Image (cartoon, rainbow, N blue to C red):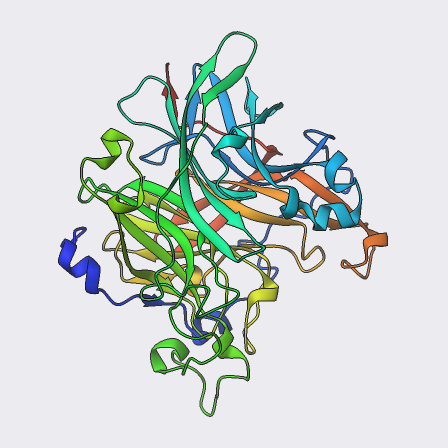
Length: 430
């Protein structure tokens, strides 16, 4: 099995495709690929903040880290006092988002620690998703890779701020995180920029050490380069469809891409994540004709397979493709640069049940298959209209953690655990 690919081939490689034919195989409510229905009386971690995109503190090699016997997680949060503790406040939360952190002794009972980044680190008004990563070779240096966003002028830039983590018997806290460096931007060549696509996505950095070559790379969400809605779909995007099938109107507006960038050798050890050290490479997977969002892409290396997981919405499918909100995935037998095939033939790994289509989102799969997500809106038992605010309960907190078994090109839901539970793969003594 060849797990390596030369730097030259990385730069000219053709992306793998999530095709319309693949998406035809997406089916909701398969018990092996469907989130359990959550109890309407679910607990809330902290009543003062909305919590959504969340990730555990981890190592650059992927393992979830327990620091000095403390579990730690970052999350996008917004103060309910600022947004209003209402339906409108929940749906307007991104305008008030910042990165907060939580800590726990048992990985279940969490204490909110407050803001992670100092306000001096903000290059733009909003802090969006990314990854909190212990710096290899250090005692307690931590890098927060995140998305620096200004929605008013359509700017979205993967960025990094660095600090240090500390703990005692009572709590966990951070110092530093006073400045930010920009990593890379959409170039209009490998990935669509704002001039090509006014709704372009370029966010959610997920850096990792590639075991095949020992280099640092970063996954992110992007879009296929080209003018929005002007794409022509070919057989490579359509796939092996039934006789007489023609892509439906609007399919060409789906142009999601799972992107990758390479860090210059030696830059990681110096903690220099600035622009001149990154090279944008062609996308690993594209969803042209299928879907317009592949958010929070992340990687798991297991049993000689490379798994990429990403989240997407029912509402971002295009044409006549359809599927539930949830986590989707792709698998390679040849390392990070593929080629990739959709997991479970369709790409769907865990979708929301049709009885509660918006109950969870922003799933993150760790190396042992444990999956965290947040609760979005949960319809009351017996409700026939899950989109009616009068009939659903807002979440803004974490869902029960579930576990997947990864078997080559297939996945299976096998376990349900506590709300917001994290399982550590690695001890880090600072």
